[in-house]
Image (cartoon, rainbow, N blue to C red; front, side, top):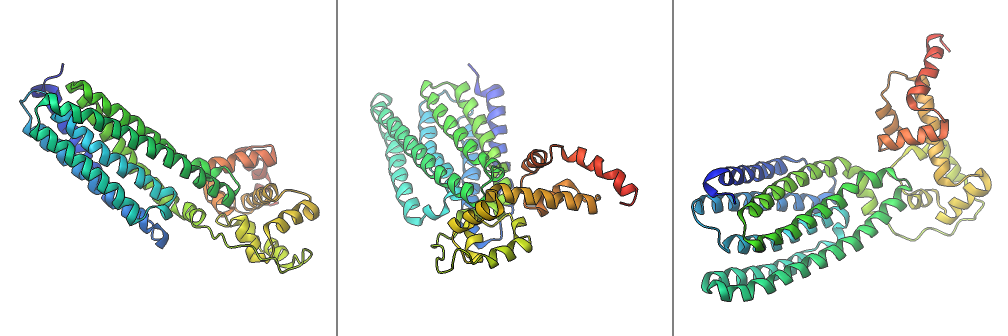
Length: 366
């Protein structure tokens, strides 16, 4: 078993310092300026405070108990903090995918329940002997599992809604792949939360391992917040998409606005859902899809990707000095790998091969 006076103390102090550094990094993360990201900014500052507080608690715990024997103080604190962390992680992630659901009432109800449970737990630890305290401690562990089960079901249900929103808004897989880290973070957090129950075995190496895992998890969360800030211009329009009913007063044959939209290359705009395009052109979504099937002879999604690829080929030919990433973004591809994949799908050659094919023409002045 590890002793506190050796590597245990050193590693625990290092983990606490890592948490404090992560908190400062989170504080420096630039939040999206979009007013729709207000709850994201609130979640960021809440999580920042939680990371800093946890780092300080771990630091104080190690310093105070630097030479003491392992008791149920560690498991008691771990369980109390576990309730809070589960709430913070889940609500922070929910803020990223379903911010409309995160209200003061929801947060207040959860916080009140957790404060009550933690207060009872810590009070019983302070006043009761160990034998009697365990009669309170183990039922509290069951409550912790109930909390985790509730959060897992809640997140799973709402992530499906989020996935559907993104899928319907963009009709492409690129954005779904770029937001998959949200689910990965949640799964990782749940695993760490379940592993925290190993504190029941009252071993210092378990305490050490969990502290390191939490430090790494918070660091991963900080990096994810940075990633979300970069992806926000793409994600937020889909989350707050307007669900107003489509206009139905125009004739099915009145497609002049849609034809004008095509001529103006509106298909290069990656932040417009099909419902937005239909609304702007004064038709219904059904009429739009019917027009492309009957008149164009192709499904809208396939047609739009094809036209974007055609535009990318034109730009590569006329402006070979531009980077592939910039060309992809200009043509409506927010994800580089998706751009590469679709380019080869529609041209049967890779982007690198296509650039080599057109370079002799450029040199010859074609």
